[in-house]
Image 1 (cartoon, one colour):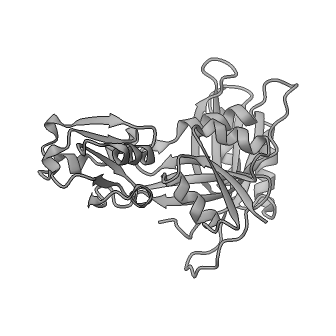
Image 2 (tube, rainbow, N blue to C red):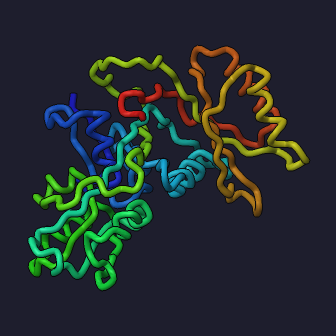
Length: 304
């Protein structure tokens, strides 16, 4: 059976790398569908045009990918009673190590007039630009929609006066020489991706690990009142039931002004952990809305 996967494209991006980590690259087993926008990935999985969708959710340096958080909010918080919540869930995650490379076709670096890359990349390679490898004062730094698009622009350039900062995959895809590899400020810079689907993805090849199996349950909720300590009263229920929270984030709810939706990631499998089930039952009494986004296994394979 061929698995169809939508992802934030184009090919050669770090999201594409997350797809390969999760599903492999055997053309007899996977068909990929690059999308221009994260919202397009949600639309594709909701319409069941694909079996899975892979989207970025957070970076260890830059934090939240707010577009993804807002889409989760907009799809799962349903203020319109005539609209049903989606049936797809978060079914897996992937961590991709982010290694930025300086690439160009020109052999004379002094000829470079323009450097392309994704907007988020500039803040992740500041030390490189402070170095004396090149005089960057007269070189324009232009945003591209993705690091892969940046590589494509250099590939198509006929003047040989451009360079880009992009991934190893982009180098291979567009046959661009890497002049300076791994120029990121933080060698442990990592982006986390979510896999959306209707059922668990095919199992990954077994790989030895010293870390135990761990499951994450992701929920989204809004409070039904804003009295002092309202959020604290909710969170203490997890402590009382000896349940650990791995992360908490918030975004404007769009239900009313200065009202927020909270995203919690909880250590535990909702299908088997009775303490976690009890915590959510108690939590629901203090919530205007509570939705389970999914329960999935922690991806130790690429996690660092």
